[in-house]
Length: 161
Image (cartoon, rainbow, N blue to C red; front, side):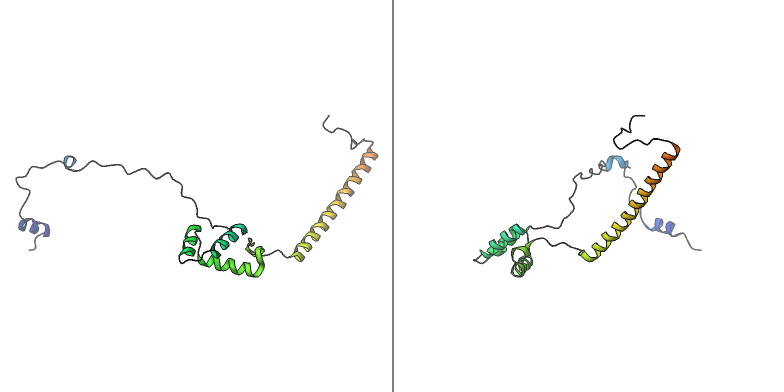
């Protein structure tokens, strides 16, 4: 007949706690500390740096003035830019002059022909609405003269009732 494994373990392992006083857990353990409060500092969202054409020209001039070894690296670290920025800016300067250093609009470029068509369609719709509104006003004038009602003229104050 097999014995329970726990009973067998108790029989083989001597009791080491025999004769030692039992100390309550509260006296032995260190006091429990509350977790620290959350940090209230708001971390700013990283934004892409934008350089104006004036800043780009200033940095390019300073880079051109760097003659000794290590000066260009120090300038790049000071301005917080990479060498690839300088090469792109130099290329834009060679291709388009100072105007090439300006900001470029991102995204699709508006097509003037499409914009003109859109405005012409919008103009037609507004002209049709104007014709309808003028027709309605003419009908209202005719109905008021048939019924003998006097309409206020444009100069009358409408707020007095």
